[in-house]
Length: 248
Image (cartoon, rainbow, N blue to C red; front, side):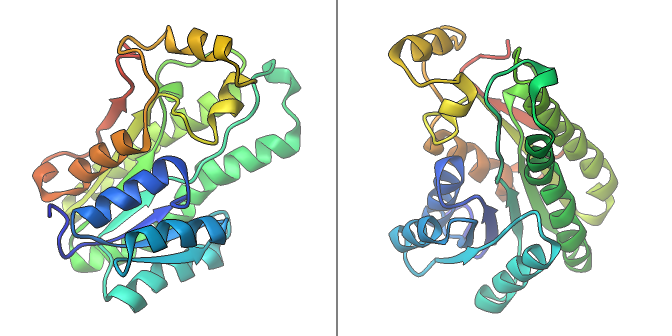
């Protein structure tokens, strides 16, 4: 029960890594807002958790939705202690000059603008209570970029730098900011990274991971739980690889 009494918001909580974070947080005693563009998916995850979770349809790229998301946590659960900026998107492998402008706009909106909007809303709340934890979902792509994913790599590099910059600025207010750098997992985004989901492509990708497997929602849930718990009270500005050794 490492998160007993804590209230968290998890964006992109309806599937993949976000769902793993929601389930782990609830198992460790937290109450959670499961925020996702796909309300049905968020409802499914929340139903699996029970009374400790509430589902909410949220477009994290829209300031009004982000504001309502945080207000929902306070309305339903009385407070807010943890924000997990997990929502993200990628693009198919391709030469960097070929990515259409509209895809670039969507990537920057979901992977970057959404964190900016969430921080604008949550930081005044956390400053007022002199405590709070933010966890951003970055990627090994921001540490060890792969060819043909240039703009996804760049967006996750931005997340890493933003995490460190926010950690330094917010430390005097008792606010911690960290990030996780997962390697690709067997989630809905896997096909996007590989271009095609075939046994051969999986084997090729796995060959770059020393521990020999993809990351799982449970892996990310466990790491997120630690960084958001009081056990990590002296840890801020860390971008933790959960990657089976991929970035060594």
